[in-house]
Length: 452
Image (cartoon, rainbow, N blue to C red):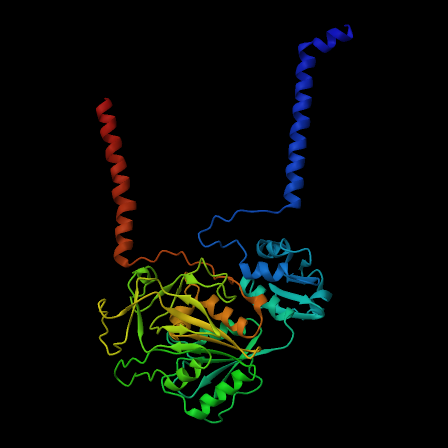
C-alpha cells in the first residue's frame, strides 16, 4: 500500500485520533496533579468551618521568622488522625515543618523528646519546645504562641471588693476567662488592694472585674499609680442596680472618677436593647448586642462578629481616649436603676451608646474600660456564636502590647447533636416505624387494586 493511501486509511485516522486524545488526557492529568501538589487548596462546606484554620493561626504561622517544627508522636497506623489537621498548618508557611514519628519504630527520638504517651504533639523552635495537651487547633496554636513568646506574662485579678472570682466555675464566675488566658502565655494570680494598696510590678495586666463595693481611696491611688507608671489595666464596671437580697452594686464612684481623668466618663444608667437581636442568642433586652466596631486594633478584625453585654452602662469618650464598640440605634439608656426597670421612650435617651473604650497613658500605660463585667462571665464567655472570648483576649493582648496575637481565635467544634425528649422520641418512632411504612403499603395496595 502506498504511503498516501496508508495516511488516508480510516484505521490510520482513528489511530491518530486516539493517540492525540490519550496524549491530551495525560497532559491534563499531569497538569492537574502538578497544580494539586503545588497549590493545596480545599473548600470547607461545614456550617462552623470546622476544617478551616482560624485567623489567629494563619496570622501566627504566616509570620514565622525562623524554622519551626510540629512533631506528632503516634502509631504509624494512626498518622491520618494528625494529618487532617497538621498538614493544614504546614500549608501556611514554608518555615513550618510537620513530622510524624512512631515511638515504637523510633524510640530514641521519642525518648529525647520526653514522650510517654501516644498522640502527643510537640511544637519546637529556637531550642524551645511546648507540648499541646490535645490534638486540637486551640491547643496546637496555644503551644505555638507559648514557644514563640519568650518570658511569662502575669494577669492579676483584683479581689476584696466583691469582684468576680477567677476560680468560680458557676455561671457567674471567671474560670473560663482565666483558663483562656492560661492557654496562651499568661499565668494568673489574685491581688488584694485592701491588704496592701499596691499593684505588684510583676503584673503584666491588671483586671478589675465587676466590683460591687466602692474602692477605698488608697486602692484607687494604687491603680492610678500603676497605670500612670506604664501599667496596663482592664476595668469592667457594672451599673449601680439593687436587685434586693443583699445583691446591691455601688457603681464604683471612686473608680468612675479615676477613669474620668483618662478621658472616659462612665454614666449612671442602664442600656436596654430594643432591636430584639438578643433573642436569637437567648438573651433579653437587658443584654445589648453589639455589631458596630471602630478601627482600633482590639476590634478592627471583629466586624463580622456579634458580642453581647448583659447589664451594661454607657460610656462617653473624650480627648485622650477612643471608642471601641457601640450599640445599635434601637437601644435606650435609662437612669431608673430600681427594679422593675422599664423604658420610657419619651424620657429615656436613645442610642447608639458606647459600651467600650481604650486609652494610652503617658506613652506606655494602657487602659480598657467596659461598662459591664457580665460579658466575661462563664455563662457568656464560652458561647461559640458570639465573639466575647475573642474580644476579651484581644483587649488583654493589646494592653500588653502584643498586637500580633490579636485575631479571631480557634473555636470549639460545634455540637450538632439532636436532643429529644421521651415524648419526641416516641413520636419519631411512631412516624418512622409505623405511620410512614403503613402509608407506603396502603398506597401500593391501592395502586395495585386500581390497575387490576
